Image (cartoon, rainbow, N blue to C red):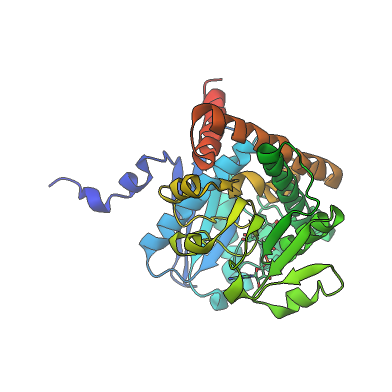
Length: 355
Ligand code: NAD
């Protein structure tokens, strides 16, 4: 009897060439997790752990495959000597406890530094501190625990520089003065981005479903847009800084802007058709994994033991040049910006795999 190809785990990872997928199980405490190590050519795989109530193991596997691959591309493009990995824990975050998290940390420790974890969706700072008590292979720790702390400042700086590079690409001028910019989601990153934009006298519009976060900006010169009216007007730039998936077939019917450039991970509903819609609508899209690298730049410095916030900010500032390079490659090769970023990330991994 041959292998049922449709259910083959190896088939699921074949095209992306993942190095290792680790299934972690402890029936006694109900721990089910998957660690995806996509590529370690450039260095150890770094990427956060997220906990989610997936509807099936298959959905969790798909998520970890996509997320770990994106981390490889993000680190490669940012010029870091780090590979791509991610972990997902399956289940309701309410079942977490110190024992549960520390058991998960044992599994990370078993990998002996091939995978380094960090905080992601539904993982708290306390969880990361518990992980640290069991393994050294964890980054994104608070300053008092030897880490570089909250990475939203370098992330916001990188997004700001990426926006400037994009506007320079289409207008020959990187100034944001009088540019109409919508920041969708004014959480930790979005609010810091708003500050950068206001310093340049941009016309800033903000939208958030959480009124408390909008209120934190009450002393700023901004225009608040209600979520139901978000795409009712033209913007020079839309900066998605909320959750993933906001750029989809439905929203693109209404979106009217020149540039999309923001911090949110996985902004595009899919990588196949959406970039074609951008071309038809003449929208310049700056890939999320290119522009939001400030976070990985920060945790990478922790991983190599270089606790230097200035270096992290300087490197995040250089995202301006990284965006310029991707846009040039896109023009030269008549390739979407998304495909260009992926190609450049893959090229760097390939060059290093030959060494
Ligand atoms: P956050 O949780 O602090 O802020 C997210 C904000 O988006 C919240 O204010 C929330 O109310 C708002 N929001 C959620 N759904 C919305 C909707 N439909 N419309 C408008 N607003 C909505 O998160 P953050 O740390 O600011 O990160 C923002 C995004 O950037 C996330 O997607 C995150 O994964 C990504 N990112 C963050 C970092 C980092 O260093 N913090 C690094 C890389 C990527």
